[in-house]
Length: 586
Image 1 (cartoon, rainbow, N blue to C red):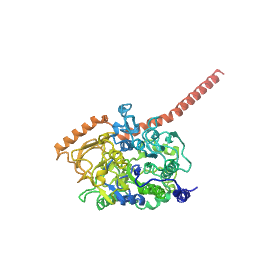
Image 2: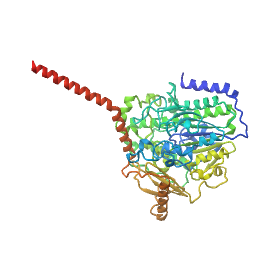
Image 3: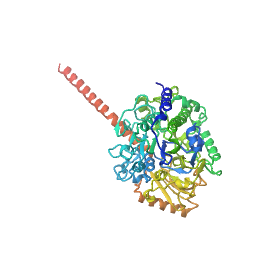
Image 4: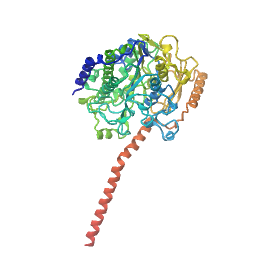
């Protein structure tokens, strides 16, 4: 059955049977809460934020709610997810980094296990204790040990991927450093169906869980953690074709277009200048027409994947509407970090591995099964425009992402510019659910007073918020941001910016504000001590660490074959030696 026939059939089922479901929530009930986490979505990737992708369903929620323009997260996925779901700094949750990027000096160190520890409580656990039904579908990435599966951390029903990413059509890895991606349903390992497409199936499963729920009168918390738009970017071709012409002129034009649009929409002040292009990356003109086309096509698939995700979010919204649940539901939509800027084919052996396992970059099968799409560092810089850097770096492009809060009894059509942070999400959800918790229980703060215009800021001018992952560091206080970006796109040097007037981080204030610069560094070192941050080796380079682990993985895969080859060669040598001796004896 084709993709569209399946979608049409499911929509028909919703229409015919959706209103007969025994949902009986009252208007006075605690609000339902839908948390949607997009993977690697930049601040301006959504239509409402000025992006090229068509996202009518998310845009509708923006118009009916609040869009935040100064919300920050970690630039790495798993640490962000740990902070999002607990309200604590990632180092205190056991997920300060991805195992893929942890250097040998930090391996097996306490707090650097890479899985959610037992000392932190998830937002789902809090909600479940207060009578909420809790569901998750999608990327978990916080562990699949007996105590770290989502089914053990507060979720009643689960359909999860516990990996940094995976193929969107098939049950297979996207990196040679991975084994087969671990998928689980309700705590048990599963295989994916043959007709799988991530955005569609994750919504299907969420609807299935809600349909099977025996206690439909209870409020629910649904966490939809999409694989979109994590590498490999993949989507049925009909979604991407319309975007092919948009990106054919290259990333410089997209950087400028988004920069202008950011000013028009008020995402940045009128005085903002465009962030500097990272000179170590080749220019658009340095590539052949064929290479340019391949890169532009990958960006078209990226946009199409955003649109497909929005379409399936719309299906879920329709389901809630048909079951009289939409009126009492709050949506929170955000991203785990900025745009993905990796160029995997630059890692030695990657092209060989892709050919070996059957990945392709064929235009005739653009975005379809087997396609390995990625936008690369230059288009990631364009997607992050007008901000600096992208995923894996502490520049604003890696950390400043969209946040939308929309739903029952909340203000509509407003834009909020005050600084907020990923650890604010858990206390915000609990506040919205009417659950009273001690504010000191979390490192983040509830956004509700600010959201409802009862407060002018989330944090006072004197409060400092720190962040570190893989040597990329930031500390925010008032208008200032202290930042250090690691290699290869950074130089590990501390810089100071006023991100209220200079959100693109173009004017370093370290020399002109020496006292503030030193104060910010002292506050950052205090943050490191409080959160048990381990020092990163001075020679650490993210790209080289990936290459090192890929090499280890390649050797691990090849070792049995190499041993077999050596044995075969020894056998053949022995055979010919014996044969020669026999001939001489004759």
